[in-house]
Length: 330
Image 1: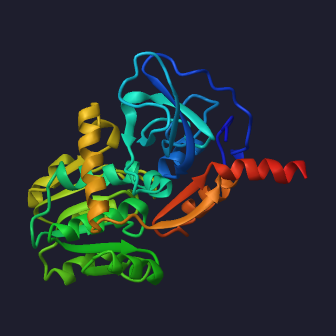
Image 2: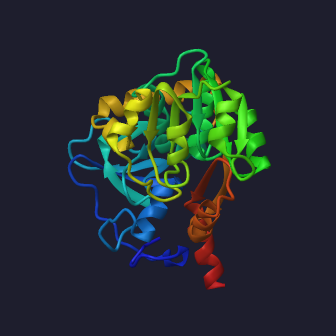
């Protein structure tokens, strides 16, 4: 699927693209499944510019088909996943060998494509700023999204009091099942006032916010004394600026995060991935897969995600592109 100009989801047509053989340190991966993330939408719209034309998708899972010179950490036939490498909305992709995560035989390709980007994002958000202690209050916005549900599960696993915000009661139920102690439907209640009520005026010790514009002002009202706010996305648009001195009123900390800066070496990336896989194998971490669409329906996947109609992760099956071609031929 190639984006040649920015715009709505219909700028995602299928095209034949020639892939060069993997160069030194590179691997050709025959993709089975690709993950869909909000960053794909930002890039498609031009909010996060990348050079045109480009193939969207930053994570996938599949089988190593061939390796370039000097590659020793993987071999043809290995089952792998990866994140933060462009071009996953495709049947195959050439990526650096050092970006690959070995997939356990017990893990499906759907699971393999569902966890890398969002699982490792959840890992750094939980561990790098203020790791929740038992009884800490953790407020998670967009808690029914792919990252949100993993954050709820991880904070719950660490013993925190977890509060999630969602837009509908259906999503609220999914977040409760993931381990949230309280869920706020923000279309019905002011999340800041409700959080303060639920915590008897204490507020949230840690706020994890991938929404931005519609939540940030409320975060400043909601954070506890010495609380920490982490901004890691802008699904609702960029947040308005503030005076740094306003943080002094309750000794607040404000951080921004991007997964790219928390997997700068292969060792760091594998350490995070291994922790996520361990949680998956032990059963306390479980990515919820909303659905798997054929690759040819990538535009519909974007519409569903942008329209807040998904609960958990939406995936694209590379095998669906061949089926699409077959229908066209008929």
